[in-house]
Image (cartoon, rainbow, N blue to C red; front, side, top):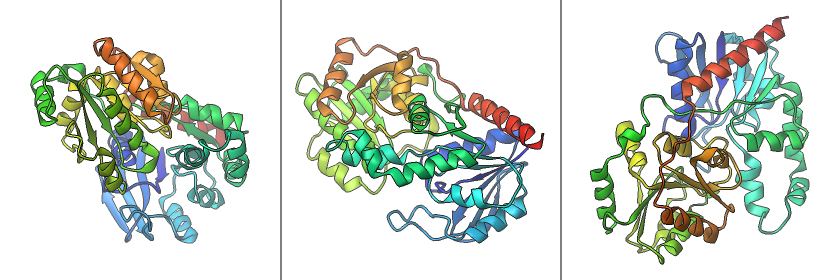
Length: 382
């Protein structure tokens, strides 16, 4: 099976999609799938990743709002690339323009839309929830919702990594949805990585003793992650007991995040930790991982936390809530710093209980996904 992933969100500079793509390139050939990532870039380039795995980029413009990303700007060039690659199945990871272009491609193969993004929650609901009920917001964004429903009719499958997103798509009239949760990188995250000396050192860097609580949060510095909610909640909860917070992330919202932190010595923003063993040790050594964004389509960082034995405190909406629902931690009312502060104090009062939630590996995810794709191919050929 040759799978071509039309991946508009891929960038070599990092992020959750890059992490996912790297796992797909590594595990796909082991599981009998030839993987081609077709992505926008500055120029045409073929990057071989071993037998049965490669990245192909085609010349594309860069996003104005974030120069680390590109977007497909030429439908004919995209179609020509697909003609040349001759896939058995095409997967598209963006709900914007590229799936419409792939739907227009003349190739006679099944197509799958993988919902790596949730624009309604990331933008529309975040903007208008304080002002309007969601039904009213849905009416305002009816053209996009019609676009999404239309895609679900012409695509053979719409893959959702969380039940929250699948339920909303189905409620909105979407068809052909399948729930296939993602997973964590195997052999990396474990409760055994917990390091008391590392924990003590991180707390010391925050000017706190070992008896304080250590919280960690991870993600891209963008508005939909609701960093201000997390920072404000930590400040409020710290009035009741000593707490420290480490944020790992980079992105265009860095100035806003630093302003929100202000002069608080017990909150630090650090660059993402690229060293996987150290990152795994930091996750396992934290007392809890907190999250502000309710627009996650899976919530990789929270899944990695649970695999590390660390409980999570997450919004009651979005994919992260799925993890807490499996016994991995607590939820709070999304976008409410007071509710998050209360949840932090509740978990602290319980003595920061470790999590025993079971987390699927990425290998398990791809085994399930590729089996689903083989069924689609067989049905299409029949």
